Image (cartoon, rainbow, N blue to C red):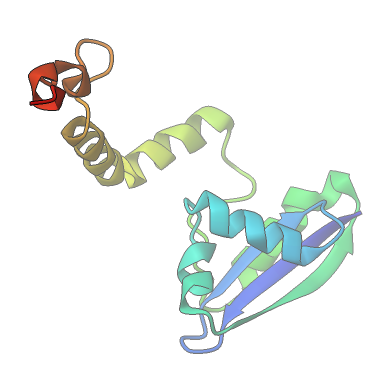
Length: 133
C-alpha cells in the first residue's frame, strides 16, 4: 500500500503533500531531511510541524491521489506536480529552480581545490614548507 501524507507547519500553516511506500512515515521524513532539495525541508527545518497520513491507496492510484490532495489543499507548497509532467520536463524545471544553488556549489568547490578535471590547487603546495629546519 502507498501512503499519501501531509506535513503541516504549525507556525505558518504551510502544507506539503507527498506519498511513500515506506512502512513508517518517520523514515520518509528522515529522507527529506537528508535530500534537502524538496520544499518539505522548509517546514521540517522550522521544527514545529505535524505529519499525518491522509489516505492509503493502491500503487496504481498513487500519483492521481497525491495530485488530487495537492490541488484541494490550502497553503500547499509543493513545487512539483505528481502527474502531468514527464521525467525530462521535471529535470528541466529542477535545473531552472536550482541554477543559483548549482552556481554557488560550483564556486565553493573551486575555492578549495579547483576544477578537479584540469588542476588541483591542493597538489600545488610547496613541499619546502614542511621541510625540517
